[in-house]
Image (cartoon, rainbow, N blue to C red; front, side, top):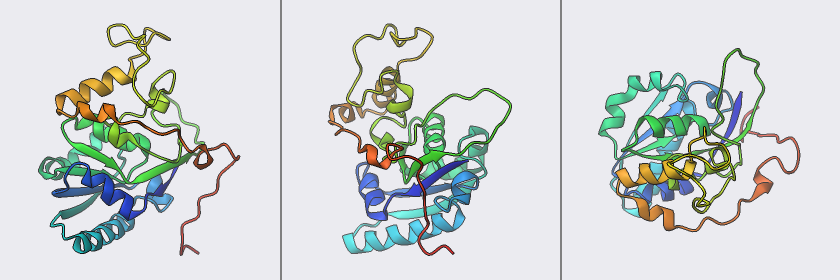
Length: 223
């Protein structure tokens, strides 16, 4: 199971502000992050209430709609909220890092903002093939990279642009692997947001990741 922790509402507000706010959809997930009390139905309601209070204090007239899907990491469930996504200016994902990226991939022309930091991935043995999309760094910043995690999907985990060694959109480390930064550029170009690539990302604070051993996530107020 994937375990996540909510970003503070003020941080989520600031991330939404990058794209101007407007009609904001808060989209949760009824799977892993619901169990870890980070992004289920109740957490969506709480986030909306918190953001509305911030908007009132800041004099912002944003509107908020809340919903959840069965599993945000599977695009077949996105159809349940397709109309809500279409009507929104910004989609706030309260799914895990994988769910947020699948949401962004399935809605390339929408601005997807993460409201949950994926902390760790719990083990569940399941038959099938899976592709890694999130390393659980504990400090999600995919709102600046078109919903693509460069730590997980760039072979060199580069945070500030490509290495320059890719060929025809493929990684120099493995020609069968797509260059994450090429994908980021193409996605941002389609939305006219390539200026986001000029932002300098500071070094990751790995104390939020697994550098100190196994992590424990505690939900305040939970007994």
